Length: 148
Figure 1: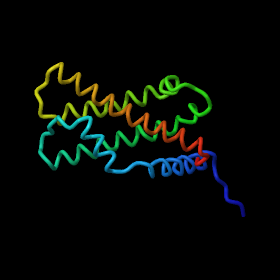
Figure 2: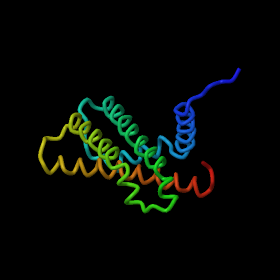
Figure 3: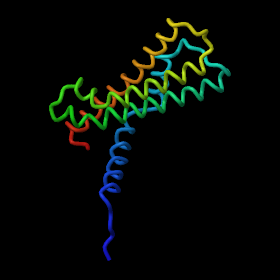
Figure 4: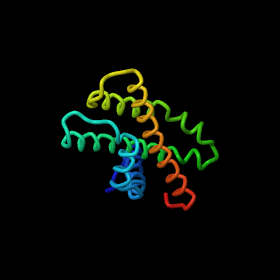
């Protein structure tokens, strides 16, 4: 008897394997430092308990952006410049930025003003792009070293 596997199953297995390899290169400490660097000045409603929950939400967005950067790094490795690679995943990046921004707006204690909203949005944008770039660079490095 032969085991029948589908293309989608094989593709998903390969994707999980690649993601696991990429995730070995980051740590919780790196994620915590990045959250503090980008958002350290904004207070969260609910105190310390909610702050931890918010940190975890930021970690989720950072990891997704990191994995997206690692996934599309194959295009950069094959010769495409970084800006055109970033255009390929523009919609996903926008979704990550908007998700994090809306989360911040909902849980932040600051009064609502356009200037504060704008600075939070830019912080979210920089946070997501930083993690996307980190994943992209790690993906390129893994491809160059043939660790894929």
